[in-house]
Length: 218
Image 1 (cartoon, one colour):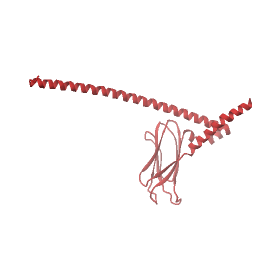
Image 2: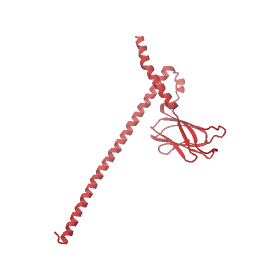
Image 3: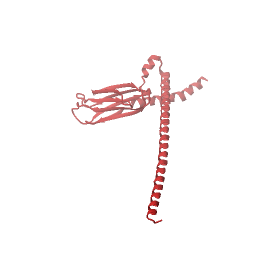
């Protein structure tokens, strides 16, 4: 019986842990590269639901380490609230918990301190939800490690997927309501347009009939 349980664990649990580890590593190591022009602004955005932890690290990448150009950064919420604003920096980070659902926008532009001119490369590491969680602190606080820690990560990933599905379901319901309202308005507009056409046609017939009667053509 114990041998059978060990086989089940090896065949089911370990592959799941491997997939989880690969997924988390891919998410954590995912980075965005931006080439900022000398003038102008470039932005990145992500649609995030409410009550989600967001972490962001950014750094200017330059071959000349003695004269690194500086940039300005501004992160705003879907309603335009300022969540992070830095000027004349070469690297920094931001962290916040979302208070509203929608597109969160991070904009970058080059300051005047750009000796060489030209484009400036910026590396951005944007983490949300499960990828932004500090699992090392969780492991130290709850005194867990190994398989148990990986199972906690798997549980967190499942919860994040479930919450994301609920969010998508609510967005779908909102879009369905908007679509139904739009279809209803279009239908009423079509009926009103048809009614106006019928009335105008009737008036034209009545006007032509009176005109021909006055001319004694009919």
